Image 1: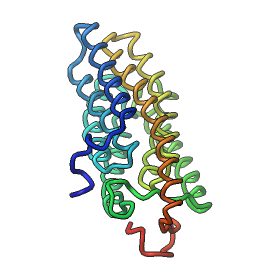
Image 2 (image 1 turned 45 degrees about the vertical axis):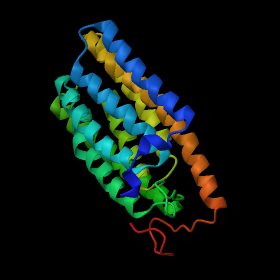
Image 3 (image 1 turned 90 degrees about the vertical axis):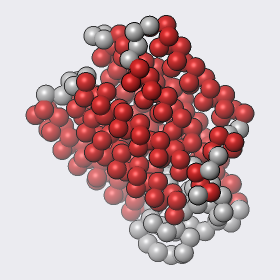
Image 4 (image 1 turned 180 degrees about the vertical axis):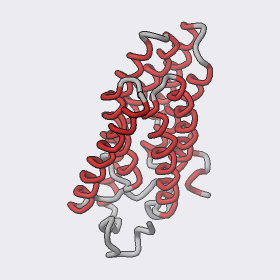
Length: 247
C-alpha cells in the first residue's frame, strides 16, 4: 500500500501550485458562469487531480483516471460525442486499470514512483500498426453512429489510444500523446460550447489538462534520467531480459 499512501504530501511546491491553479480555474469558471454543470465540474476536478499524480508516476493517478473516465463518458454521451464515450469507457478506463496494475508491479525500487521503461523498435512498430487499425475502425464505427464532429472525434480516438498504450508501457511519451489529445478536445468542446455555454467548463478542464501533461513529460524525463543514473535495471517490453519488470 506504500504506492497509494499520502500522495499529496509528496508534491513539490511547483506541483502544488499547478494543481491549485488548475482547481481554481475550474471552480472560478463555474462560479462566473453561474449555471455551470456540477457533474462536469466534478469530472474536471477529478481529472486535474489524476494528472498531477500521473505526472509524479504514482499509481493513485491511474485510479483517479478510471473515475474520471466514467464521468467523462457520461458527459460525452450527453453531447452526442459517441467516440469520446466509447473511447473513455471502453478503452481509456480498462487501460488505466491495466496501467494501475502494471505500475503497482513495477515501482522504482522501494518508492511510490513507477519505474520508467524505455521504448524499443518493436514497440514503436506495434504502436504504429495498432493506432492505424484503431483509427480506421473507429472512423467507420463513429460515422455509422452519427457522431458529432466526426473528423475531430476520430483524431481524439487516435491520440487517446496512443496515450493509453504509452501510459501502460510506462513511457514518458505518454504525456505528449495526452497533450495532443488535449488540444483536440479543446477544439471539440469549443465546438460544443457554441451550442451550450456550460461546455466552457470542459474547455477550461482540457486547457489545464494540457498544462499538466506538458509538466508530466518534463517530470517523466527527469525521472527517467534519475533512475538511469541510479543504476535501475530495465528490459524490453516484449522480452524477459531481467527480473525487474513484472508485467
